[in-house]
Length: 236
Image (cartoon, rainbow, N blue to C red; front, side, top):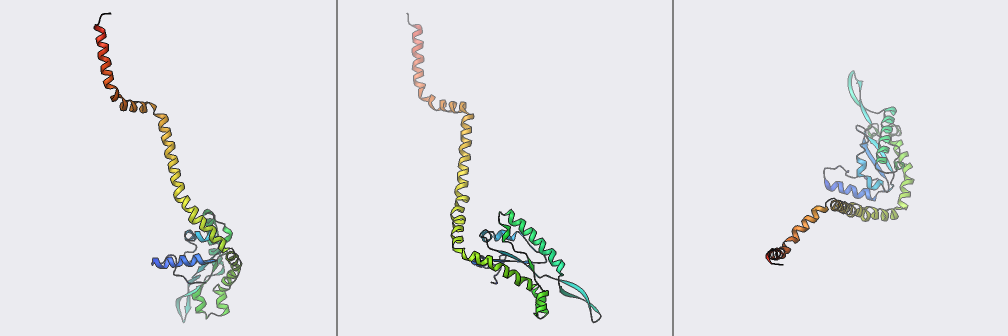
């Protein structure tokens, strides 16, 4: 489990470093703030790795909320863990939208693990006791991590073959699909358009050809005209 700078870092170098970590990973933890959970467009940036069948675990962070409470006779805002019902609603919503996004991208939605919610702030505030960790969602996170170990190990075992396969698909065939095939398609369209133009404009072609060759015959036409005129005045 690596703490990377993040895909959306303001520093391009940090983003590139994160991509290098992701390429080496056997499984992916998709961190998403519960304030705006499950921004599914982020999955597009992970599409290369997801196409390789790596397991994906969504983790909703900051799963806490401010509530008003009376402390020493004064109303204060205190941070609390979100309720289990609230967490379940967000987790189900993220799961549904992420599954739909993966299917829209042509990916197998079975790589998506059930989302979990955590609050590191509440776990630390309550002293990192077993009860605090459980209420902050960390017991659920640990269980989810245990569940994705087997898919991650399965990918790790077939990783050499996967790397070679996807190198061919992404770099070799990908260049053909992205460059050569579009050019061939454009050439095919141009040939069809040219053939159609030839079939529809034979008269224009003949006129153009006549304009090109007519000047070469003009001297012969003049001599022929003079000879024809002279014959008109000669006796039989």
